[in-house]
Each structure stands twice: as structure tokens, then as C-alpha cells.
Length: 190
Image (cartoon, rainbow, N blue to C red; front, side, top):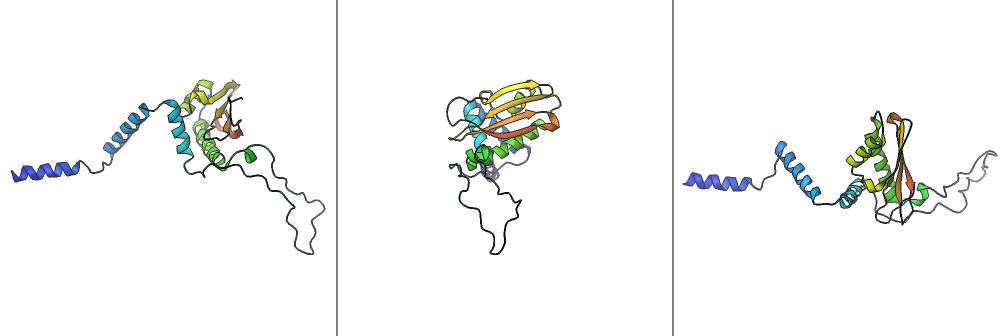
């Protein structure tokens, strides 16, 4: 009787312990599958965007380019006659995206380029399948067209008032994904 009581106490205590190994992996994947089953594609897309951007700074207005005179040279020195003064950008992603979108854009560029890099025949259907597999939903994939051995696409990644979009071309080892700027509101236009 004492042995049965001890065994019952041990069994109850084991119920609260953390699983490890295969059992933990199976329960973790089952939990994530059940969690995602109750979440619509729009909510799952937003969760993916937040997960990718979790290490990025919070949203803030983009910083204006520096203004004012250039730094003066130390006394007694003159600038070479052929010296050019650098010009700060006045348009494009460098100026128009906030810090969070810029950071997240870099992360999205990298993850998409890696996924498309080994795609030997990048047809629109294959590119869409890879983008969907990464969590990008069809409603945010635009302009998916094939030209020769390259498939072009745009991704609308506007979220939380941001203006981030990506302009990509899947071409195997020549795949390129760059940030672009979308209008703050309204429909996405290629």
C-alpha cells in the first residue's frame, strides 16, 4: 500500500516536468500546429512579420538627412581642388523607411534570398510556393511574372504604419531582393 502511494506521488510529480528530446519536439510541433490552426492567414502573417522584426528597434519616423555646412578642415589645411562633398540621399528607402522597417527589410531580404538561391527553375508557381512556405501570404505577393529564367515579384510588407516593400527577382544564384517604399495607405501598386 505504501509502495502504491509512493508510485502515485512520483507519477503526479512527473506530470509537471519539462519534456526533452523527441517527445518535446513532437508536443512542440503539435502545439504550434494547433495554435496556427486557430489563427487566420492575416494574423499568422502579422505574427511572422513581428517574429522577423523582433530584434529591430521600435517604429519611429524616418530621420531627416543631415543639413548645414560640412565639417571644417583643421586650421591651415585646404581641401583638394578635386574633392567632392558627399551628398545625402533625398529619396528612396534610405530616407523614407523608419528604423524598424529598414532593419526588418534587411532580415526579410536575407531570408527570402537564401530560400530562393538554390531554386534551379524559378517559375512563378515555385517562387509563390517558397514565399508561402516562409509565411508570406498571397494577398501580399504582387507582380509575380517570369521573364526568361528570372521570376520577378513584389512583397507588400506594410505593417504598423510602415512603408516597407520588397522588390525581388528569383534567378538561382543571381537572385536579388531589395527594399522598396510603398505608399503609407491605400492599395499596393507595383
